Amino acid sequence: MSEIQIYGEMSVLYDAAFAWDNAAEVAFLERELTPRRRRVLEPGCGSGRLLVPMAARGFEMVGLDASPQMLALTDGKLAERGLQAELIESDMSEFALAEPVDAAVCPIQTFAHLHSVTQSMRHLACVSRVLASNGLYLVQLGLSRLDAFTPTAPNQHNRWEFEFEGETVQSTWYGVEWNPRTHIETSRSEFEWLSGKDKGKVVYQDHSERVWDWDGWSSLIGLAGFQQVGAFDGDGEGYPALPLDDGLDDRVLVWHVLTKG
Image 1 (spheres, rainbow, N blue to C red):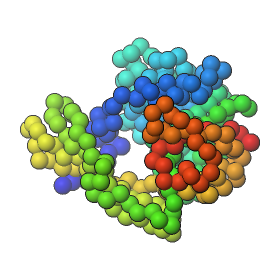
Image 2 (cartoon, rainbow, N blue to C red):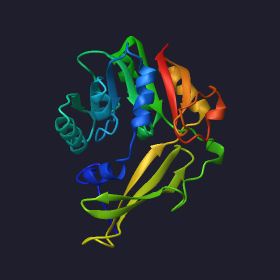
Image 3 (tube, rainbow, N blue to C red):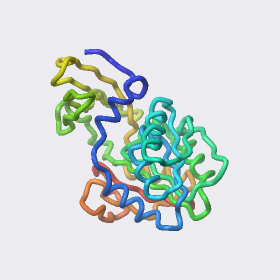
């Protein structure tokens, strides 16, 4: 088994692992943004999983990511479909735009890669500065009860297979460490080749994410000058609305709808 930089030279592997259909998610975002919000920022856009289909629906997309390899993948996908977007190589907690955006979207736990309150506040300050006065920020972030939090055990439901360069690869994600002082969970993405010339090959990468509960999340966005005006179940059919209370704890994928206060 060997460690790799999954967001660096192996970005193509990461992109293939998450290449599932997200049409329902894109439709949900289109519904929430409404026709008035057409210029949209995606901080941490990665390989364009959401950015490209949103650009195809007529949104003027601005993608920001610290990985040049991920941005290159996004740029290639846009070119293949004859689409355009503004792509910026930058850190999520330190960026600026030449023109404001009507909205911003931050899907699939990307916000959790901001490890500290300081980093999170800097990011939210950047988003606030680039958002128009009536802008929305949609953040997809699962919340957990910190006093009962335990990392995901190996092979516990986060395992699937996908095709990569003509070979079958198995992806397994699991937790390896939890720091109750910093609220950081370290998890591991492990990829094993099940077929082809690379059969038996295994590579992995560790990832660190900040875990938030409802109280901490509410305090953070309030201090940053945002107000939460909605929440939707990102793991439920039709994205049903959810109450804004600590019942959001222990929900895997919640879309939080924020406005500038």
